[in-house]
Image (cartoon, rainbow, N blue to C red; front, side):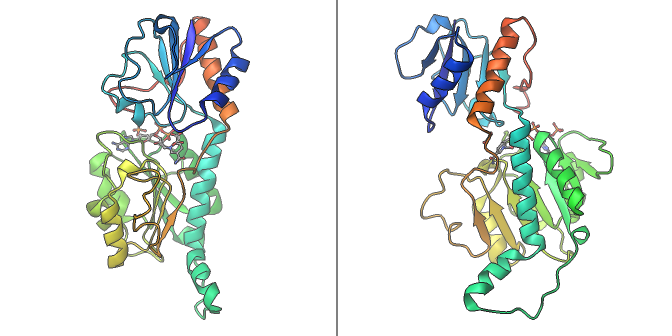
Length: 313
Ligand code: NDP
Ligand code: OXD
């Protein structure tokens, strides 16, 4: 019985060492090297090459090495076994740090002062609105969205959330589905996207959505997307920034990653680019979570954080 590591762009030897330390009884094999396909019971994947997980007759579960699973369901030949993802308080905390940081950057108009400093400009208009006068709308009220909402509320922001299914969350106005979208956007000065990428959410942050954001706010509207790049239509974001209907965008994720050198997002004065690192867990913590899941299965206990393949998240 073995664990197969199937990853691209990461240091596979580091991951092999982590899993070997945590699961000394289990051989850890690596995609691309020779291994016994019949012995593989578990796969831990980050962006494995599509089609590469076929022919594993005893596979019992696939673990995403991250919170997102879009790369798994993009593989049309993904084996039909349970898929579980990372749900980790450390990752959640880091994402909330990112969201709070960038909401505060917009609230306190910090980008403006960073542009003014090289010109030694002492701005006469030094007024700073209170957090309660900025309305933050969080798209995606899952593990990450709910935690970010609570932390933004502690600072005083006027927060609401939008999800696929209706929700009742104490102290948090919520909206759901297509029917709730227009009202949600109309009360949003800072839109925070923490959605998964699915066929339903692909391209959702486009011209129509951006045009629906609040037009009566003290500041903004602004966009923060830390969900997935496939959610956004980058030419539409640039057009809204250039038209002045969107006042700033903070993007951690992109249609193509790494962001191509010739992307106009790199140099746009109203865009903040971060390299898809809004929330990176400690690899040791992720490996420990997956090892615990494997031990749970081996003990006949149910897997946690299973993803619904019909929803794609
Ligand atoms: P969850 O699965 O816990 O939450 C997803 C939320 O999105 C749910 O509230 C869900 O609604 C909502 N949602 C899904 N589809 C739709 C839809 N069609 N319309 C409206 N709402 C929808 O995910 P997490 O919070 O754990 O993670 C969210 C995403 O964050 C990940 O999938 C990943 O892409 C991204 N991520 C990015 C990282 C980074 O570093 N940039 C790090 C980690 C994650 P409902 O509640 O009704 O099901
Ligand atoms: C994740 C990510 O999904 O880092 O965990 O994007």
